[in-house]
Length: 95
Image 1 (tube, rainbow, N blue to C red):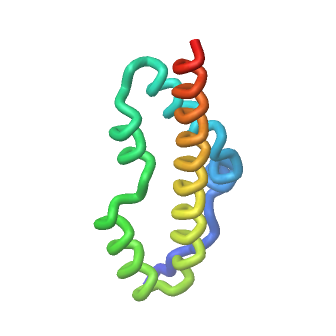
Image 2: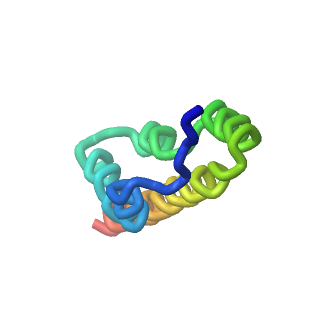
C-alpha cells in the first residue's frame, strides 16, 4: 500500500510564502471591474471544502498541518486584498 507524503512540493511551499502575489492578482481583477464580493468568494475557502479538509485530516492526521497552512494562506490573501480594496475606495472618494 502506497503511503501519502505530507511534505509540500517546493513550488507550493514557495507560493504559500507570497500571499501578496495572489492578492495583487485578485486586486488587478478588481481594478478591471470584477466585483469585490465575487472575488472575496473566490479567495475564501468555501465551507464545503473546509468540511472535506476536516474529514481528510481525520483520516490522515498528518495532513492537518498542510490544510491549516493553506487555510491561513487564503485568509492572509483575503486580508491583503481587502486592505487594497478599502484603500482604493478611499482614494476614489477623495478624488
